[in-house]
Image (cartoon, rainbow, N blue to C red):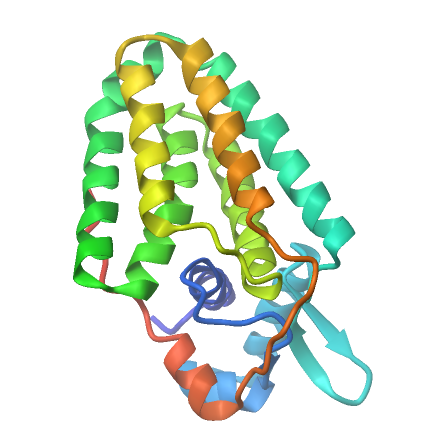
Length: 229
C-alpha cells in the first residue's frame, strides 16, 4: 500500500516538532511527490489538509510554504496551550495514575537524547511529552489538539529564537510527572502553567530564518528513529 495523504501530513508535522522544518520553508509539490513516491495530486491533498490545520500556506504563483506565525499569533498559541493543558491536568484524576510509568519513561528518553546530543530526537520528544500526557488522559481528540498546538509553538520557538534550555524543559517535565505520581494534580497544574510561561518567556520578538531548498527539504522529512511503547 502506498503512502497516504495523512501519512505525508503526519511526516511534515513530526518534522516541525523536531525543528527540522523551519518557518517560511518552501514545500515543493514535485519534490514531495518524488520524495514519497506519490502523485502531485496526493501531495496537494496533504498540503491542503495541513493548510486547514494552520501549518502551511499557499503563496500566489510561488507555491506552498511552512507558515510564519506573527508574534500575536504566538501569544494566542501559548494562551491556548495554557487553557487546554492546565484544564486537562485539573480534570485528570485517577485514570492518569496508570500512565505514570509511561510518562516517566518518556522523560527518561528525553534525558538520553539530551545527553547524546541528538538535537532532532530531543526536540521532538520534548514537544511530544505534551501529546503523551494528553494520550495518558485517555482523550484521543485532545491528543490531536495538543499535537497541533505543540507543533505551532515549535514553529514559534524557531521563528522567535527561543533560548529555553532543553535540560530545563526536561526537568520541568519530570517535576510535573512527580506531582502526578503523588496525586497532586493542583501542583501539576501550577507546574505546567509555569513551564509554558517559561517557554514563552524565552522568545525574542525579532526573527531571523533563512531556509534552504531541496536538499534541506529531503533531510528535513527523514523519519525519526523513535522507540515506541
